[in-house]
Amino acid sequence: MVSEESWSIGELARRAGVSVKTVRYYSERGLLPEAGRSSGGHRRYGAGALDRLLLIRSLRGLDLPLPEVERVLARDEALEEVLAGQLRELGSQLAALRWREASLRLLRDCPPGE
Image 1 (cartoon, rainbow, N blue to C red):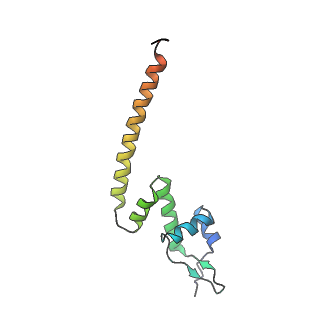
Image 2: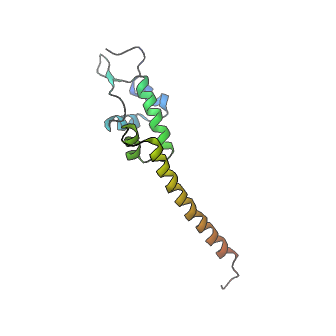
Image 3: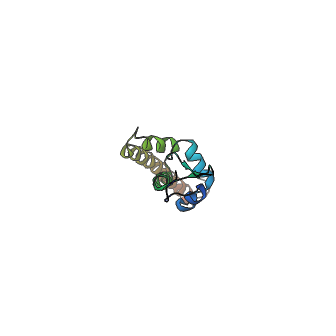
């Protein structure tokens, strides 16, 4: 039996600000709690699914790759560890961008012919 506080896949997607296709994809990957079914056989999602979907959306918004999101949700890896790894990677990318910026400025400021 489906509780009063449940939504169709379209309603869940709208509440979370994602597409229905995204909800289906995350459901198929096992990232969302098992959906209940209405008497007509349609998927019905509760507040737990919305909370999980919003968390996934937040983590993906930080550019965490989906496999890392899956590990965090499965509690195979602590969120702090994943974030620390992402910060290290971001630091390396920033250093490379700073070097590139400095090189481009030097080339731009060089007299012609040098």
